[in-house]
Image: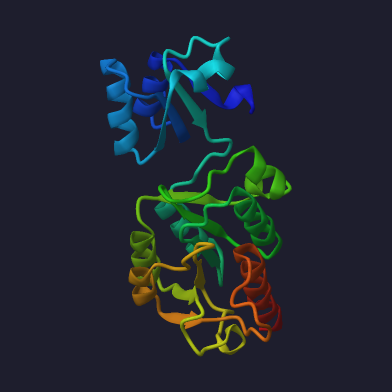
Length: 246
């Protein structure tokens, strides 16, 4: 726990939310009738910030802070505006690559993905505001600091990002076992957005329907799937291979 990433106290957390500070998570005192905590709850939900409700005993580790029943964890990175970053990338890069993560919730998997993305020249990472792992100390450590070198954007809904990328001439590719098409038969040397799903259920069906193409990694063993960070690495390096050969 890094003290500099904690915002505590009712007034401080309210001001952080009102000024669009990037907040990863808020811890609120459970069953409190304090109307100011209710205001924080409402703003957090409006900003799609994750809330955990805990009993007073859980605040013991913060007893040296005047927390007033609320602790907020500020993001360690500055999230970029998706549309602004996309336009800049499309203007300045001939064949950019975007990586969209649909519900990757394990912080170490996210960190490993960020590390590989930085090594393979991914231009931007897009995460949903809810249902995604936090970019916290563990994420940054696993990424070997790559999180600080990437354009990382948060959007309300991945569908909106997909629509925007498609309308901008970017081909969207879902990596899923629900296809017969291999990544090795998929052209990835043009402007593309690769979509990877969650560790448990993969890509949401509604998102699969929106994408231009579907591709899978060949599997020869008895195990049905790879860890998402490993699968993502294989796909990104195939994309890099094609770009280097084109």
